[in-house]
Amino acid sequence: MIKGEPFSWMRNGKPRIARSGMWRIEANEEVPGDLDSQIFEILNKLTHDLEVWKKLAEKYSLDLFCGLFMESSMEGISISSEALLTLGQRGIEVDFDMYGPDDENV
Image (cartoon, rainbow, N blue to C red; front, side, top):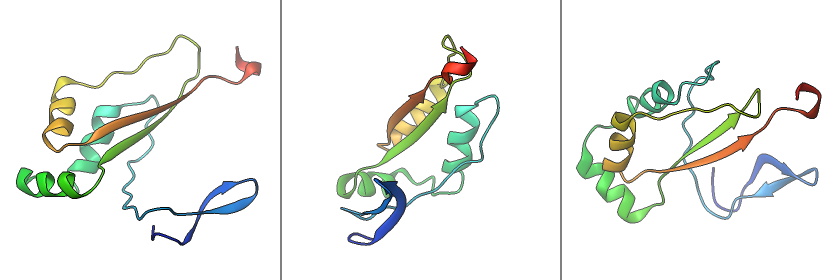
């Protein structure tokens, strides 16, 4: 995504304008959810050099966005200590958006 360009996430039926640039890499959807495999799927496509990650984290905001779509109101998901350590070593913050089941499914 390029700063100042419209992008596909819609707001009020109109394209939004990017306030900053962004690089995006997506993992395959997993059902049931498996954050560990998705985290490593993404990170294995990128450098393992922690010095490169340090320089990126000094210059940019690094975050891993996770959209969690729950099928029931009492559902959970976990991230292993190995995945958390790997993200932390790279200065990557994790951001969760969690969505509960539709009213019809409750």
